[in-house]
Length: 314
Image 1 (cartoon, rainbow, N blue to C red):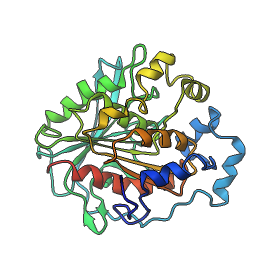
Image 2 (spheres, helix red, strand yellow):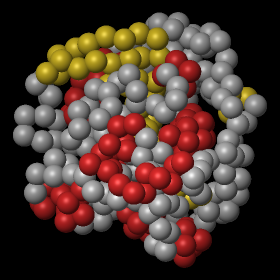
Image 3 (cartoon, one colour):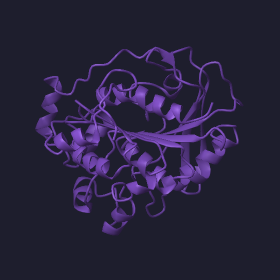
């Protein structure tokens, strides 16, 4: 059982699984959205529109230190035609400070949220800034980070569009050809909201490929009815939902280091509570005050990246 200790960057408490289960389901979904995530939640009925007023009342503010970055390393953006997605997709690869193209480095695959793309997968920072972060007063261990366009299909296969296969069979080999994320160094996967769900799903489906997973505010529903009522495009059918249910398939993460963070006032929090029940006892679970908004996402990015870095080999 994860102990209740300070999180990796000292900004929020880490709760035990027992503490989470005691308070999680009772949390009210007092959330407002920001940017594309908010548009999804309100437009699809996850959030009542009047709850947007909560942001103006400060209900979703999350205190945290101002990010500190080392001198940024290089970043490359480009495109490739994805056979799995049947379209051209954009990507960005960022290198850590004091490393250049061709450096042998571990890799983090960062999955964007609903309505996002490779340019805005992270909250409040660029990929180059993410790998140049100081966490707890120390530089993040050297690693590369890649973002890519995954569409709005929750990072699993739909008719004519398979973003998971694109990541596994096309994006990662592209990075490995550049000496990133090779077997000896390892690959981590991370995401926010829809991307957090996608990161968990990819780690469950490919446990030998991903060395560790970190999910921030993952968009987890517990039933197909909930999912289809909120976003009819997320799953094609009840069978599709069952095949891609990160809660019922969490046992696949038994040998994978896992970190999950969720705000108590996140509308997806009940789904996260259900997920936590099924995660291995070694999982790091950080439940703290916050909503499904940028302040919570930004506060959780440094400890999530530090967690992944600790399980990859520079």
